[in-house]
Image (tube, rainbow, N blue to C red; front, side):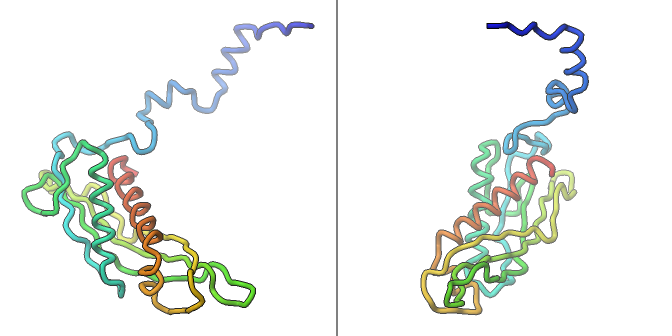
Length: 187
């Protein structure tokens, strides 16, 4: 069996130098794993998350989305999350502006078998001590696809989502994770 000779030192140095982004630079530039970063001022310890405003035709959507955002913030353990918007270091507010459903798939009998729910939420995270907005997105979107469990049709997303609690929970959790990650990691 023939053994290959190791790369000469000059070639190893050249390979490292030609690497598009050496690992050491990634660390030095402040990169971190998603979900682990934190770019908020150190004095922010208590975050208020009052009930989101619901401008859709789905009752209770505001409660589900707000609860998911509070729960996601609470998993970060660095912050105390409260429902008040006063007496806090920062406040996260939101308005659910729209909710629609689109047919994603049909059966062979040309009936809708899967739907995609798409919504838009205006979100703002404000540092109350410095009196400035740290992060805002006037049209943060969320979506979730789910199967229809019956052959009935409806033009109202609330009719289907109320029957598929799991889809609604997934939608809220995914949206909350996206928003909290964006705020904490300054995306």
